[in-house]
Amino acid sequence: VSFICAVTTARRVTLIGDFNDWHPQATPMKRQPDGCWHVQLPLSAGHHHYQFLVDGKPTLDPHAQGVARNEQDEKVSLLCVGH
Image (cartoon, rainbow, N blue to C red):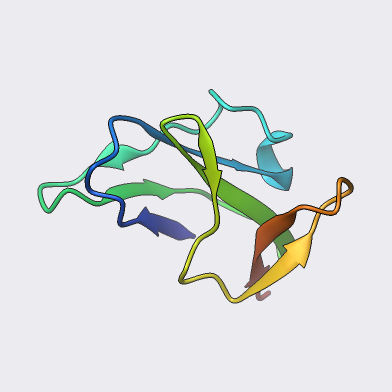
């Protein structure tokens, strides 16, 4: 699954979610020539909750398939991976 974060002014972007235990250093994203950030991950089928960590600030993905809430009742991005 490809994740793209279009915050071109960011100095650092990482991907956090239920697939990496929300660990801020687990999945760094790479800046692309156009300034967007990208990472590709193999994810199991099912629903996944995630956010971008843009310079340390949790950020929703505007291109997510939906918005859900985590255990702290905070908004998180939702992704559904098919079989």
